[in-house]
Length: 442
Image (tube, rainbow, N blue to C red; front, side):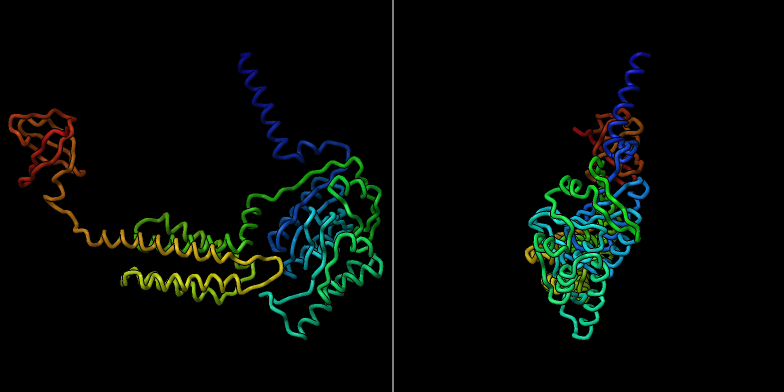
């Protein structure tokens, strides 16, 4: 009983330790000091980031947090998603501070307006903000009339968000849109575009203590001197979806998906390759709703897929495979690299060429296996039995039964002087009618 009690206490202690590690809010939620929730918004402004920030604000509200700090590092992204993030921040009943960090980070393009949307804003040293001029969906310069409309609505937005700031700050904010101007942290602080320059999170909390912000038209004084900090990390799903904002990852999924489908077509009957291919291609098409792509490239990729299938049905010693690979490379580059939208990287050309070469080699290898299998004569009847190993199910002396190739056969020893008890493994050496001749497996 004493050992059992010790074991229970040990397991309980480990459980509490792990619970406090995985769910810090539950372990820390009983303190009397104010709670500050920290979110790390990195990468392009996409629906994934918007969902993460929205969830973080909900967590902060449920935990009774005094303040939310969004550590922002983004080169920009979609204006529509930016507007949703701004709406979430401005509708929050909890003060939201946008902190451009770490050193070397930026609040570019859409990130500029997200920073201004915070009830307070700060930047780390050696960070930058600005270059918020609008561009087209594929990164191209937009027409003069459309550009004027987009800029006017964005300038009106920044004037509204920066209304409490000095005229110099509003002018700089408008210049980031009108002339794509950017500013360093020190320049932004000098004109009042941001409220603080903080070297790290602790420095920011120190400076925020006693700072007054307006939340839903009500004045709120922050008290952060003894605040407890709780970071809300992205979930596994959010991390996985964030990967789908990288064209290189999406291209690899596209390559694996096409390869898996081709393997399934060249060697039908299984389901693993087909399932993997369908899942990968489903993720690829989902990512097309997140990252900017030129769908014209899909024409070349579909053409490559058709050429691969034609190679399966009418082998041309690799000629169609070479054409398919060229079409696949062209399609991938058009799909991803013909788009230049701020915040989104392009796909690596060496990666495209290398992965396409691997795709071709793998396809040719599987096609070779399939062709050899088609040319191999099907073994039936007597030739199929000779050389098979079976087990004696009824003692052979001089006649008995063996189970071979999943069937029961009458059997007799090759050497009439031999006999075999049950369970002995034997090899078929000859077939006479419905009876096999066997010998002991050495």
